[in-house]
Amino acid sequence: MTRDSNTATRRELSSNSASPATHSHILVIEDESSVATFVRLALERNGYQVTSSSSGVEGLQLLARQDFRGVISDFRTPGGITGADVHDWLRRHRPEMASRVIFITGDTASDETIAMLAAAGTPCVEKPFRLQQLMEAVEKTIGKP
Image 1 (tube, rainbow, N blue to C red):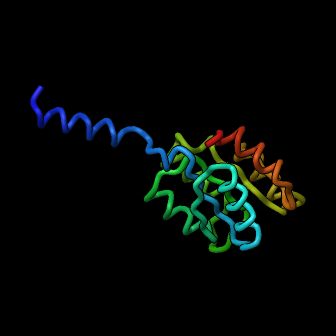
Image 2 (image 1 turned 30 degrees about the vertical axis):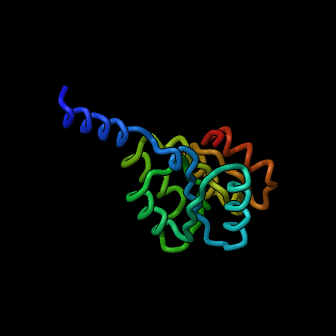
């Protein structure tokens, strides 16, 4: 093997493996700043890297450009893109991530939300939630950092 082919092989291997940053990088989609801050701080204190987005639209843009280990999304976000829409996009475009989504919502009383949550089949943490509830869902669904 020539020096150039060794270099190309190393480059190919390194581009195919997840970077250490991606290994624990979580996208949080939440429009309520107090909830977003709480979730971000909880995750960071437990060793995760966090990128925050305040809308489903922005979240989809980030997912299209970056690699994440998982997604925590409010079920209802402004801009016409719901958590269910984000999950559907992941199933179609990033199927390896579709099982690493957690919804957070304060709207589990409406029949529409209950039906959409059931159809998505993803874990849901109901607001208000305790830190322990969130971290248990994260470790079970996304994994430990």
